[in-house]
Image 1 (cartoon, rainbow, N blue to C red):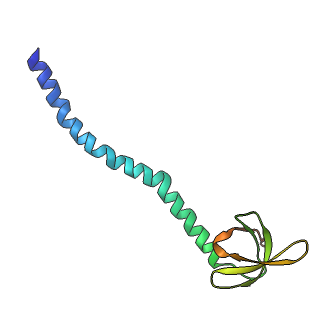
Image 2 (image 1 turned 45 degrees about the vertical axis):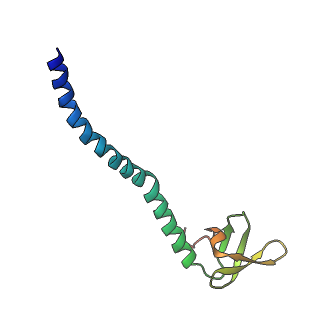
Image 3 (image 1 turned 30 degrees about the vertical axis):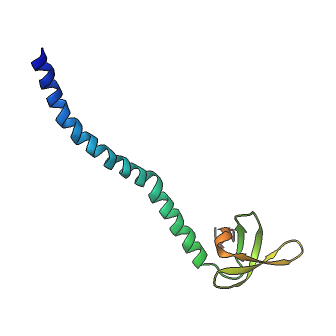
Length: 105
């Protein structure tokens, strides 16, 4: 009986150590595919959106302010906000979305 237990432990002990070494690698791969990669794609799309800004675009900031771009600077822009035509300066990193409707869509 003791010999059978030793043989059983030997069969699964060696395979278990290989599996236990592979498990962290698989977990890192899953975390990368499920969390890191989609965030990188989202960041790339957001950076492209910022680089394509132009005067006249309607934008929404992360604070919920909507306005029309009057002028662009290196890291900021001037917005005209309705209803009084108030002009405010906003940093580009605060832009959440461009809401200009393209013609034909």
